[in-house]
Image 1 (cartoon, protein in one colour):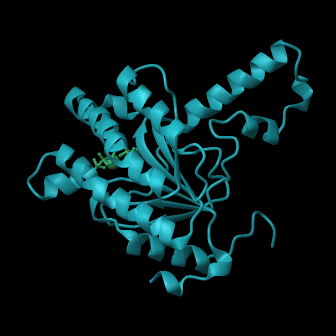
Image 2 (image 1 turned 60 degrees about the vertical axis):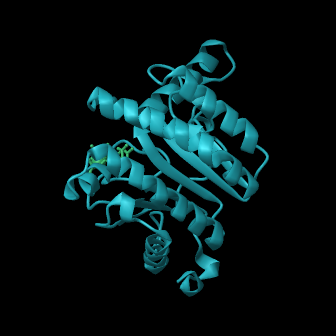
Amino acid sequence: MISELDGQRMPAHVAIVMDGNGRWGQQRGLKRTEGHAAGEEALFDTVDGALDIGLRWLTVFAFSTENWRRPLDEVRFLMNFNERLLLERRDDLNERGVRVRFIGRRSGRVPGRVRRRIEETEALTAANRRLTLTFAFNYGGRAEIVDALRAVARDAADGRIDPGKIDERMIARHLYAPDMPDPDLLVRTSGEHRISNFLLWELAFAELVFTDVLWPDFRTRHLVEAIAEFQRRDRRYGGI
Ligand code: IPE
Ligand code: IPE
Ligand code: MG
């Protein structure tokens, strides 16, 4: 229950690897894509929970730079699915004070119409501050660091920065969402215990919580359980 959480020790930012959709479908004799479709309810129940909890930042891994390796019909389904989800949900999210943002590479293989939905949704919700819901879409942690280094190198070539002064803060300022605090808590569903190229830079000090629940079965109560586990941890950041 949300009331059992310690209000003094809330994570500011929770990041989730929404994994296990394909297996959820297969276990039911359905197509993998039906698992993705069922993940929509999990996502919006989790967003409702995040709003109830008073979380300020929620980031979800929706499509990785590696997911292009999947069969074309699954990739196509995921592009259409994310586009439809934005169209159908953005007004409701906007009314509830949710700022929707995207991190990842916008160009490349993302279809133009999906990119337009992304831009429209970001513009529509830009003034909201209750909860920032960030979709990592065509996102890779290594790609993000490469893109940040390219931006830093451009500034160095133009003489705007001294290479000797490049430090962690400067690199962080060139990430996709420089104002986003690092996640305090990373949750991954479906029993997989890996990062899969998610938020490599930002997760440096995150607490990691894994659950066997497949993403389409994930609900607010699982988010609450993960935060309760987070609150039992002792974060030391290398100190004692
Ligand atoms: C996560 O579920 C959703 C995306 C990667 C888009 P998967 O599709 O990876 O489901 P499993 O891991 O194959 O069961
Ligand atoms: C990570 O899950 C990407 C998303 C959840 C969008 P994957 O299912 O693609 O990761 P791997 O293949 O298990 O590493
Ligand atoms: Mg998976």
